[in-house]
Length: 333
Ligand code: ASP
Image (cartoon, rainbow, N blue to C red; front, side, top):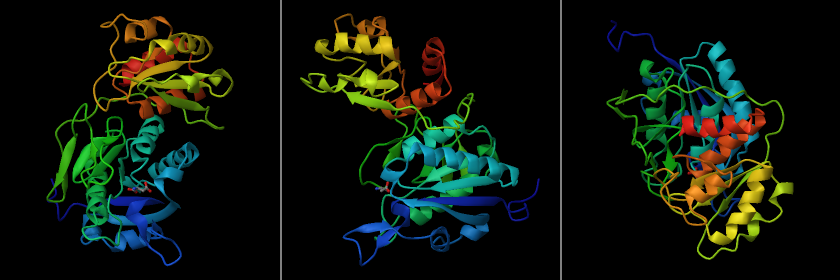
C-alpha cells in the first residue's frame, strides 16, 4: 500500500449553491447575503490543496430557503457528468436551512458510487469563528476517502459524518446544529481523514424525473387545531404528509377529512417529533395511529415529515402504485 504522502492525490469537485458559508456583508443589504464565489470559499481554507486536487464550479448562488426541487434534479444530472469525468468525489456547499432536504432528495436520485458530500456553515464568512472553512476541508477529506464510495449521499458538519437519509438540522444557530437523532453519526473526521464507524445499508434509487415534480404538502397537528387547512386539498395537491403528534396522533375532528383525502391520494402519517418511529398498533382511539392507518393513511416509519414529503414526491413522480408506496416507506425508514 502507498503511504498517504505518496498516494495519488484525489480530485474533488466543489459545487457551490450559496448559503451562509458563502455570505458576507455588502453595503447594499441590511444583513449578510450570498456573495462569495466557489474560488473565494476554497481560497479561505488552509491546507485544502494538500487534502486533494480541488476543482470549483459555481452552480447556484442563493439562500437555502430559495432552492427548489428542480435545482436538485439539475444537481443530480451534474453529479452524473462528474462521475463520467472520473472525479473521485463531489462536495456540495449550500445553505443549512434546506440541507437536510436537498441532500436527502439527492440521495433518492443519485445512483453512482462516487462520494457526494454536502456541507455548509452556521456562521457566515465574516464572523468570528466562522465554521465554513473547517467544514469544507472535512467535507473534501470525506469526499476523497475510499470508504465513502457507495455509502450514499453524506453530510459533513462539525467534523461529524452523517447519512443524508438520517440527518436533521436540530438547532437554529449552534455550530453543532446537525445530528442524526435516530442513528447517530456514521463517523467522524479527525487528523485529516474520514473514519467511518459503520456504513448505511444500500438502498435502491428512484428514476430522475424529466418534468415538473408533483405537489405534496405537509399539514401539522397542533393543540386544538380544527384541521381547516385540510379542506379542499384534493384539488390542490397530489399527495399529503401529516406531521402528527407523538407516535402518529391527530385530533378526532380530523379523522373523516383525512379518510376522504386518503381515498383520493396517498396520505402519509409522520411525526412532528424529531426522533422515533410512528407506531402502527399501540393506541386504538379515534385519531390514533391504528385508526388512521385503518382509514388508509401510510405510515412514515422513522422518516420525519420533510423527508417523507420528498420520498412521496419522488414516488409519485415515478407513477408508483399505492401498495408500493407503502412498501417504500417501510423499506426506507
Ligand atoms: N442560515 C442558513 C445557512 O446556514 C441560511 C441559508 O440556508 O442560506 O446557510
